[in-house]
Length: 467
Image 1 (cartoon, rainbow, N blue to C red):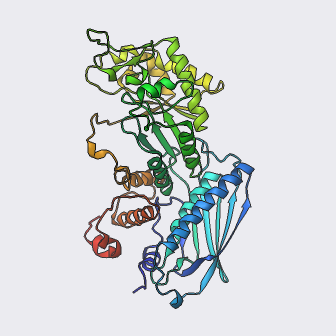
Image 2 (spheres, helix red, strand yellow):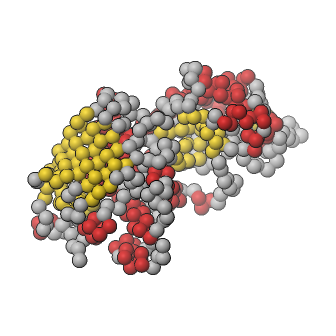
Image 3 (cartoon, one colour):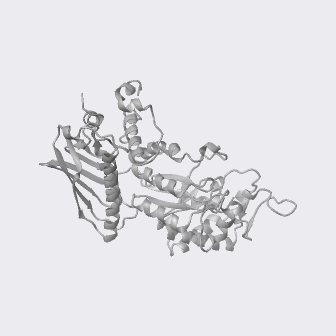
């Protein structure tokens, strides 16, 4: 029998980490009590000033989450603790990478070593890059639990974790073209992504239904394309999201839908057209508006590409869109876009100061099977879709409960794949439930995976699960 659920978790099953580490792990069986009132830290080694700035901000986020864990629980019998309260000593080292931004070649591995020395519990977190150390801080926050009986934080006396991701691109997509999503909702989604080590926000910022991005050199796009003046993202909005993402080891990839269908946003542009016109020469279906394969079109796209590169700071991965979805009465979409990829890649290279991004990405569409596109396809990232054209209204305003913890389950597969998790056995329920509670503490309204009673009586509920 244990005095608290947290003690039982640490001693019976070990820390319930999400995603599961795939490297070497070792846990002791002795609990240590901690208090943030006795905390000291040191950045042992940092390869550049900008990495130091990023690390300082990321460390504040880590401390905020740990402090919140203490504040959000009632300290009932704090004077009756049966464990001596030890100091927290944190040592952090970024070994070599002077660039804090996530790139395709960024080493995201990290090592955590926790040892109890006298009256101190020493946390040593190291990684080759800032992103790796940030992931290490995320895992460390999961190693510290609240003892519900005493109100103190607890962890195990000795822990070793060596971890790294299986896949370098671990993404989540938000489509703000079809449904406008507020900046605060996007910001909160970044917190959810960081909690399970997703590293790429694919922001499909426009579609045929709306263009909510304000561009200084192309204001007509949002003038004609936004649902409402209040539903527009400014450059300040985008850069704020990019900054918050970067501190969490996340890149932001902006996708502007082109060459068609592009909808009303481009109806002011002479080189936009639609296959069918009414008697007064307007589009029969405004959503079917698409861009002609004309030099003026690619001049505009080059401006957009330049703006995106400047706002996101991501120049090794770029989403060219080229998507084509089935819309009623949008005829001859394939033949209207012949030559788009070659020209778009040329303009992307010019926008990126003469360098083609290492990974240009496009949506999979049937025209990729054509011989003329095959060679281009071979050197691109191709994104698949299972798109439902008319989602119901109940999908609006429920972003947290729809994403989480579903996206967290995908995040674990992308981090640890099947090396550590060959099957989704019954113990996954326990880990995912703990992750959901962590997300709730951060203000993310994740759906429960089972009744709350099971969270506090897991053995009974797990016994009913056959796997």
